[in-house]
Length: 72
Image 1 (cartoon, rainbow, N blue to C red):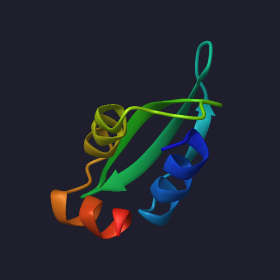
Image 2: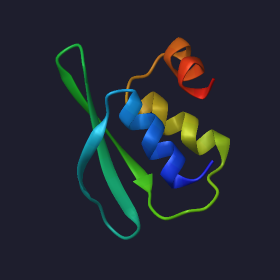
Image 3: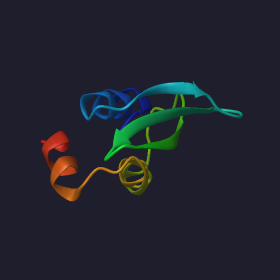
Image 4: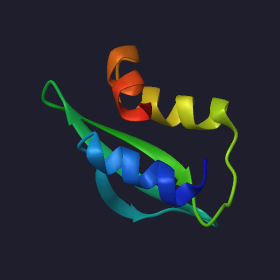
């Protein structure tokens, strides 16, 4: 999946842009149970490995069920 699609899915899950990171990363954040979780996302890539996207989802506190719903 592309960075653009990953960001769209993250925003559907309640994540939002936090800030620019170092180099080619942007930081997205999501609040879960009163905690703010953050994850770096590679910016401008046409193709991201599925494993990378899964790590980002997990860092932002998404459950397996939530991930499956987003990907349908």
